[in-house]
Length: 481
Ligand SMILES: Nc1ncnc2c1ncn2[C@@H]1O[C@H](COP(=O)(O)OP(=O)(O)OP(=O)(O)O)[C@@H](O)[C@H]1O
Image 1 (tube, rainbow, N blue to C red):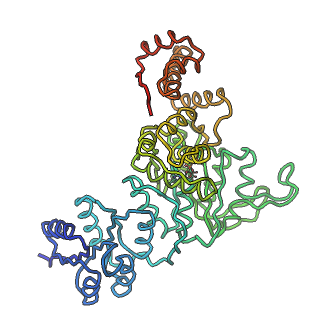
Image 2 (cartoon, rainbow, N blue to C red):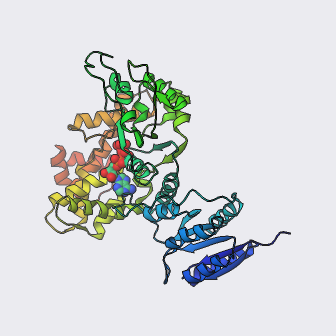
Image 3 (spheres, helix red, strand yellow):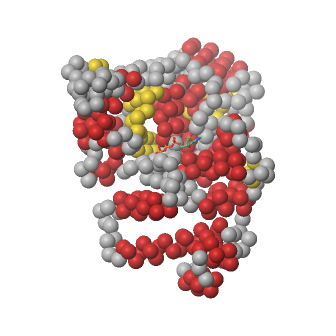
């Protein structure tokens, strides 16, 4: 049998030392554990151990500061960092300083054992870490949910590479923010970040926008125009709403990805592409591929590292943090300072957030601007939410201006989502019937359950409203807040 491998643990929490020592011991490892960074450092300098697992906050030294020092004296010794801070900054710092893996606490012992195994099995070369340190400007990504932790880890790892990334997620989930984080903390951060939204540019102009054009290449091209590929040279090109890219532009983009060079519209001279590509979409690209609207080969070229941003309703534990973050931002932009009452928080957590973080951000700005009291109550949130029932449309752009536009957008989303198995029968009656229930519910919500006011708002007779509430089995709540 081979010698058992030795794992060095540093954590000032005795309980964690005990649990880790037992679990690793049971798996056949030798363990040495300490509460101080100084002792860990001594062991490392003495050449002990095959792997380090260290906490961040310790009484004598920050574990993150230790990582580059360890990597310098023993480049083959892998370091796993665990932290209860679980912020995006910690994940990025740990990775950029050369940690093999970052584990937000609390973690699963099985997960830890898997990481330990991987770390010990990985070939003994220096990790890509040691990238120049990011200076401490304001960090953008907020949220401590497990889903966000996973995203922080992926983003942190990707900052040391140039791999193409595909970000998917509903509108307003933070796709552009993640793209920026990939750039701001990545190898190309000294270069430009250039974004182009396929849904916002007339289709016939997309190729010229992307690749540039020669003088006279098309009507109106009076001068040579530089494209986004050229503008982004040395940096990151963010292709937003990639699902809306027209077929000819897709073909051209595919060629650039395959050959590493492009020509301008109307030009012949190949130009070397020097960009890191991050693409994003809220649409289901696989479905677009099935419908023949998106090239499968292009999809695979772009989908090298997929990142899926979960909708806000799947990570409600992030809502309080995000809400406060957005109130802080509102204050920084000159709006009055506000706080949220516990009831307000509950109301926020109960909402479905079809517009995701953007909707929450807009709501926080509105509340900060409109409400006189310093502490925002549950009723204020409830009535704002009832009024703002119309989320951003599928294109994620501005809120629709009229009720008709809003309804049309929702119907369009519904139809697009059911294209293949659209319940074509009785659509007229079904839609009208299904509008009634949310409409009444929202009217009742906006009037805090007051049926007299709701009836007036709807323009219905009180008895009719009461009858409908019974028929539709709507909950009758009074003084809802
Ligand atoms: N995790 C987060 N932490 C802090 N702010 C966030 C977070 N997620 C989203 N935001 C904020 O919410 C707003 C919407 O995010 P963003 O524009 O990145 O969404 P998106 O997914 O790109 O939307 P769309 O698909 O509509 O373009 C931005 O102001 C962004 O800063």
